[in-house]
Structures are given as structure tokens and as C-alpha cells.
Length: 256
Ligand SMILES: C[S@@+](CC[C@H](N)C(=O)[O-])C[C@H]1O[C@@H](n2cnc3c(N)ncnc32)[C@H](O)[C@@H]1O
Image (cartoon, rainbow, N blue to C red; front, side, top):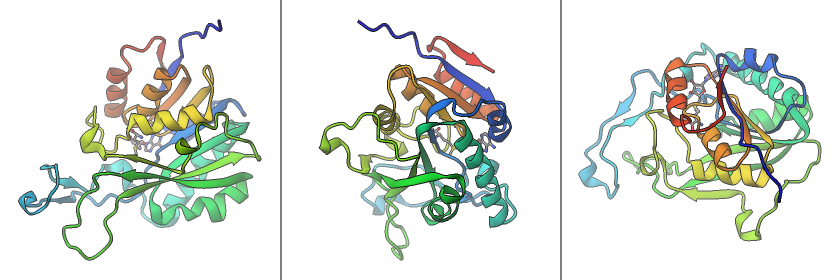
């Protein structure tokens, strides 16, 4: 029998570029992260009369996630920020490691066309989260936005660590949107089930996962439940409090 120590979950409260600078080269097995998409519009909320729509949600739709998602004056500033954290991720990722980045659909090209080549990362796929209950189209002028895209790359030509049954290895995952699974007040919380699937395929027990834009700590919770170590970095104190509450039962949980 192999005995695995309890997984270690660490939370760093601060700016991820600064925190990652203090981490050694080639020190994490896999990165799963969900950075700002730069899509928020200040104060933007859509109010709808839901009676007209066959949809199981009654709250307003927020299009403003917070200052953290709209603090760049220009698109160039946003791309510079993206490049700075991506470069640090590449440095701390082990030679055979894979990186998963949730990103706005219109902007995933920055990784395929620019950053992966510049930093020696191989583009592997775009993984798609298919939402089984997307927000309906109220104005009916465009396609319904029922997917979120995750850019996937690896250091070198490395294989996935755990190729499961063929049926589990499609590059999409179907699950409802946040209204069906939300555990916290974070505005962009992702499904634990999806993150657990990515962790299972890309790592083994005892490996270390990094999420440098931790939000509500979904990656930490998923890693803990799968016996993986996890390093979480989050700069907003109110979200760090959410993470601390969510991880309260995990031992050891270290706050840096
Ligand atoms: C899209 S959310 C992540 C949500 C997360 N996947 C979840 O399931 O809760 C991005 C997070 O990155 C944080 N953030 C933004 N800029 C940051 C930075 N420079 N360093 C660390 N965290 C940052 C934001 O405060 C926000 O909580």
C-alpha cells in the first residue's frame, strides 16, 4: 500500500506576478488558472422579465465582475499584463507540465499566435466548457454564448499523465453554469467537477497544482479532494477570506 501524506494547500495573498517571482524554476507539475478576461463594463447589469423565457434563473445578469477585470486603460496594457504572468508561469512549470488557461474567446489567439512560440510552450488544444443551461439570448441578434474556452499548452512534447477511457477524453466538458453549482459569492466561480477532471488527467497524487488567479479557491478544493498539493495566489483580500472559509476543513492549509 502506498501511503500518501495529506495534500498541502497554500494560499498566497498578493499579486501573482510578484509571488511567482519568489518561486523556484520548474517547481509545479501543472497550472490551471482563470485570469481576468478584461470584459467587465463598470456598473453593468441586465434586468429582464424572465416570464418570457424558459430559463431557471431569476436574478439580474451582472456584466461587471469588479475592478480586477477592467483595470487596464488599453488593450495593449492588458496584453502586457497577460504576457508578464504567462512568462512567470512558464518559468515555474516543470519540463513536462501542462498549462490550462480560461480565457475570453476573442482573445485566446494571443497564446496560439504570440506567447506560446515566444516562451517555448507547445499549443495542444482549446478545451471547451459547454454550458448545459446558458443565459438565453434576450435581444436575439447573435448566437447564444454557451461555451467557455480554456487554452491548453505543454512544456515540450509531453504526454498527458492519465489518459482515461476514450469517452472521457473529448476536449469538451458539459456542465451547467454557475447558477446550478455556486458555493460562494465570487462572481466567476468555476465548477469543481470540471477542474477535478483536468487535474485527474494531468497529474498524480502528491503532485503540485498552481492556480495564480485563485478567485474563490475552486482549484484548491478540487486538488485537495484528489490528494494533490496546491498553490493558490489571489490578490483581493475579500476573495482570500472566501478561500479561507472554503478551505477551513483542509489540513494542512497554510496562509502565506
Ligand atoms: C476569473 S477569477 C477566478 C475565479 C476562480 N476560477 C474560481 O473558480 O473562483 C480571477 C481572479 O483573479 C484575481 N486577480 C486579478 N488580478 C490578479 C493578480 N495580479 N494577482 C492575483 N490575483 C489576481 C481576481 O481578484 C479574481 O478573483
